[in-house]
Image (cartoon, rainbow, N blue to C red):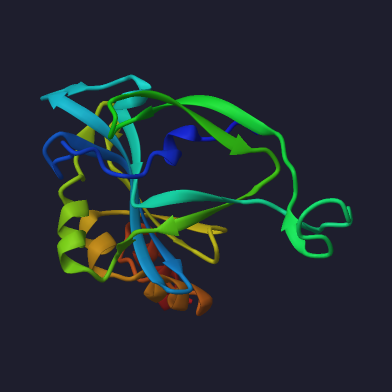
Length: 200
């Protein structure tokens, strides 16, 4: 399966200016075991209605990829760490990606069959961080920013109708309400459901 290799470069470029030169195409708030976190897929904005369309103009922010190799017992007594758990040998994919810190394409080696996991960087309960992510919302070359709540280890993704709901509610609230068969959002469909229930 092809890697979404643009996710691999997670450090923000030195010239990254929140809400000025970048706009979010998609913005997520995810519930994890250790809290709720923001991350986004952003595109560089060169001017009004002028958005980049190259790989180096797109960036995932807020999380970084970690690859975890499989383990096995070292059964070859001629090798170091005999009888111990060691990393499995794995082939590697060599891909060229744009490194924003160096300003050029670099080769990145990614182990095949390694388990991919994420390190989340931006806590959603940080008010200053929330303001920074809010500044990324707007109209892009493909429409307005799409916002999502994510929980249950990524298996449940809910599109959030507006900026107010996205920042005023937590993902935990949504998860709790959905378990009860309700919604935290006062959308047209919610009002219609309530109206039908009142008439029954």
